[in-house]
Length: 360
Length: 197
Image 1 (tube, each protein chain N blue to C red):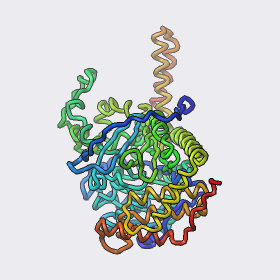
Image 2: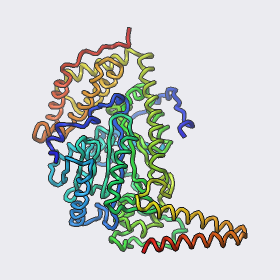
Image 3: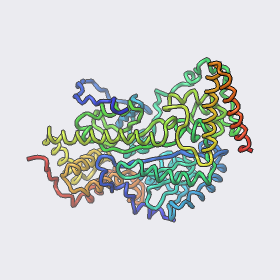
Image 4: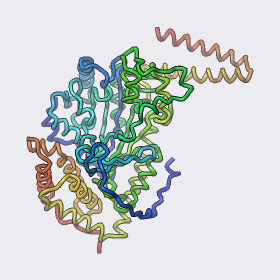
């Protein structure tokens, strides 16, 4: 069995932007919701019922060939910072972190596959890949699902499909999503139209916005909303088509920006570089905004290509629980801002001055 | 589908508006996080202060885990949810009616939007079905079927089609065809029964 410390020491490839194509689409994720016939859903089950079901499910998950030497952890045995670290790494959900006894997570060695037991549903199977690879993520999860359905009596109805605790997941129980970095569309002020257009196709777009029009980290998630009345293939194909379109729009927006107003783009990237390299106190919003510009600058060839990986690792390492886990104690918000600035300075120490190659 | 959508890439008109200091939608503190979700083309905006944003999980860097926030002001009050159309009045479901399998009450479903167990779906089927169309593309599963249930699934589908054809035949007064279809249906039904036992 893999230990917590080992898991943390080796972030998965998809967490650090290993895919050659992750400049715009950071990650692809597929999640399946499954439940067992005759057992109350975790949110309604009594504690003892949850504990009993957990032990029988956990054993079956751990014995999957894909889960050899896996990380298997009961949530109640983790501290709140430890749980939060797993949330920040997207290995468990916020909802699961809030759960106590009778809930566990099993993560495979390469952290491409994780199974949450007794989250909102009895089983939540999740697979994440770097870049736009929804199909690969689905193939892995479908093979695990097929192995499990031979050992477990899934709750299934011919009309409603896989039965889930929340009716919004009925049918395939499949949620596919991708995380996109869209600074070009945000800076050129076209993000609103893109979001509206995607929304009209029945897909959900989520992002965090700072005050006014400025967005936080320029990160957006696109996912399917409907799970019933549409096959797995059709959900994934549709989402993939839309994501490719958005990716093309982002690419065009970047090219147009450096053509129309190269000074402005250079200024943003170079200032972000200066600021991150020399800040002693930085909150997460400010850090995110500027790291996003370094990420954009890397795609525009101002920095060595590996800088994307550096940014994505940093995005994770400067999150609150990661900072506290690293410090080995809980930190006040002020202490976090100081630690965050130091980690960024250290990490970017050897990053050369931006080469503004698109001006001359 | 996508081809019908064009991105009007003209600069939107700049509208100057006076923006007063916003209040958090969850408490009275000053809002610092402005969260927008667009689902099915409908945009929902929420203003939150730092601590409520943390609590609601919207400060999560990677939106993978962004929850769908229930907006306090948008929470449907029970009255609107009770407004089932009249066609449903024949099966008036009392708030205290409970699922025989797990004891989950209809009232709980209305409050949480979740069910107690997979058996609840049979028991509260009419109420749930009523809401499915607004939630999903369709109301009938077309995806994968667990191994071992495939045969049953196909038989069911076949029966549905045959029954529909039979009804059509009857209304078209083609009784010969209807009788043939009826025999076919009962043959399949018999087979299913033997499978079940």
